[in-house]
Amino acid sequence: MFVRFIPACMSLSQKPTNLNYLSDHIALHNYKRKIRTLCTKRLQIPPSTSGDAGGLRVFVLSDLHTDYAENMEWVKSISTARHKKDVLLVAGDVAETYDNFVLTMRLLKDGFEHVFFIPGNHDLWCRRDGEDYEDSLEKLNRLLDACRELEVETNPMVIDGLGIIPIFSWYHESFDREKDVAGLRIPSLEMACKDFHACKWPVELSNRDTSLALYFDAINKKNMNVIKEIQRATSQIITFSHFVPRQELCPEKRMLFYPNLPKIIGSDCLEVRIRSIHRSQGSAFACHVFGHTHFCWDAVLDGIRYVQAPLAYPRERKRRMNGGENWLPFCIFSDGKFADKLSPCYWSDYYSANPRTPHNTELAPWVARFYKQT
Image (tube, rainbow, N blue to C red; front, side, top):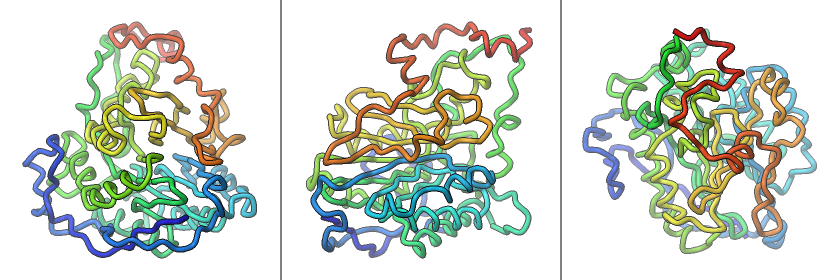
């Protein structure tokens, strides 16, 4: 059975409510331009497209980066026959350019029955010649318009008894609460992260505070009534975002070539939003898919399974033992149940056997070689 929530209307001029972390200083009604996402009010239940519920398969994938020719060729190589009745969740960072984004999503939609998308940071870059956007919010609207034209889903739905809920998000620096690595000449966030230059925002929004994280989280509010209906309809739910909901889903700073990475990866709003959907204690049927860091990950934290299955950059796949070309997209759900653990996942496998010790800031040997201690 395929349950579709028919779009009606929405306005981001409403201030977010009910989640106490949304502070009053994010006054969305002051923003003249709105994100053209659609609210969902009415239910329609067309015939099932995949037979009985046991036949549904859901695949996940993030960080396609198809501006790289090798990655675009990989997308083109996905079988258009094997996945005709399957669902694909794309957890952001499809492409930097609009044309590559549209081509990629069209290829994926040709291969899968249903494709869901949530934007990542690279999708909202505005630095390419020939692409004239007022800012990254305008580009986001263009991408969402393209998704509607391609029949790519960006709203919550129920397909054959499985709830699928995309979650909009952005990162904030205060997400990082672990001890910094001292005594190193670490490049600033502005130098290391191209978002500070490639994204363009209205003056009210900034990467240097929580305003962007709060703004993107507020986009999700339009779907809260539908999410409640999904919660009543099924106990099996997959949520997905681009950004990271918990710092434990990233290696400790001493393990990272860029130790300040945790400051530009995640959002506290996102984890609160996830827990409001899956319940605070989680369950055996709760799963969240994310992307952004390019680390394969599969771990259960406080009752929720967190999975990352990135294609990543070509150079990363060449040097990583858990690169994604050969096993992606990853099948997270089939035969009415969630799939077995993704393996190998170097870092989540490591932390399943070793405790996290963020107070230890002694650099791992492979990181120490790249820094001159001061």
